Amino acid sequence: MFEKIAGELKEAGVQLVAVSKTKSPDQILELYRKGQRVFGENKVQELVSKQEVLPSDIQWHLIGHLQTNKVKYIAPFAAMIQSVDSWKLLLEIDKQAAKCGRIIPCLLQFHIAEEETKFGLSLQEAEALLSSETFRGLKHVRIAGVMGMATFTDDEVQVGREFHRLREMFLFLKAHYFAEDPGFKEISMGMSSDYAIALKEGSTMARIGTLLFGPRS
Ligand SMILES: *Cc1c(COP(=O)(O)O)cnc(C)c1O
Image (cartoon, rainbow, N blue to C red; front, side):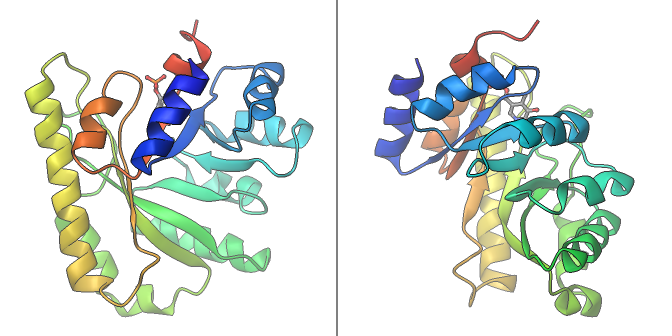
């Protein structure tokens, strides 16, 4: 399954983030040996404990909700934080990255699901952030794009609509705030159940767990 999905995404020019939450270091190593280097975790503690025992050239993406008091544990090594959903969090990432002498690539997580349960910014909140003086002063974070999760539903039309909206927000922000910045380029969308739709809607990064590792218990 890994070869098929990795091949399909590569063909489409989409980066595969292998979502390894709840999976063991040995299971991760299995994909590592097949060439996968980018892995995603949604919990800080689990991420840290895996990072400690796995090869140092793995690029770890934090994809789940991040509490500000835990940023310090992942700032030394996180390759990307995909789940920036508040101003306060972005400021803390900048502060902790500065302490490590790093610049951490981040994605702004948007609330795109029509259901009410998911974390994420609204376009209005993102604009307030990006147009502020304080944002321009941040030297240790780099906004590399956007991330979003669609509603968990069989309704493919709805999922397509939600992904479409994320891409439109990306294009809007690109035009208004990042026109001169080629580094603002990622649209992280698509999971096991909906990545085909996400690809059609212009995803550049898919976060896939179940299809690669099997179901989580
Ligand atoms: C768990 C998770 C995924 C992957 O989900 P699968 O359905 O197992 O592919 C993707 N994104 C986020 C934010 C997740 O928490």
